[in-house]
Image (tube, rainbow, N blue to C red; front, side):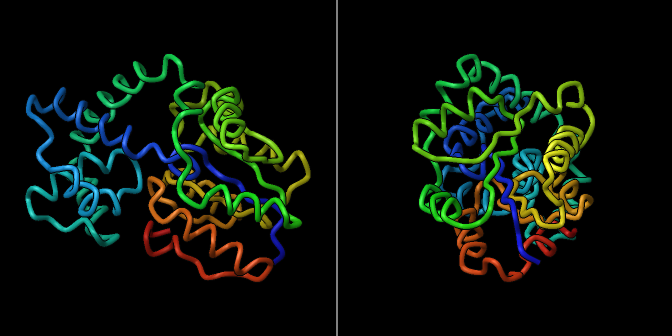
Length: 246
């Protein structure tokens, strides 16, 4: 089916905040475990980060790695997530407190974070196609606009966190409101491609009949963009189902 819109998440899909988020993980681990983060930076980058789908995985996968448990398959990852759910929740609470300190000047912070290599080229190529490019994000419009303007990127519209206000506690609630807004504008969910790094958002996209593609914490994002560009307007191979068990 001919695609008419590409819906891009911002942080972790277009914006390379990996170094900053890695530092937040190390700081939050120290807060909850009262000991330094136990995996060297290179070991973390190659052994943990490529398998992360949601930020909670930082903590559960780290514990599994230290215990020599398997988290590199869908079944193994799900078992590890369930086993270390309390650790992951505690880690995320500390992570968000650390991030809140960083976010006091979020628009300046966002504008200075680099895009993933090649993302700008791909956005410009998408701009040349008969397809609308939207940013659908939990960040605010001002922060996203600062990043786009600083990097010279052009999109057709931004659907920011204001659409999901009051739904933060509902898993995927904000994304549903954003997708509802897209539908009200006349865009068919069946003709939308969604790039995101959060499992819950990809599940909502699939629930709406959209085509979800995972970019876990930005990992392989550019490759996934290339897949879309090369295959447009033909259908292209799914890459998310096995990774996320959708």
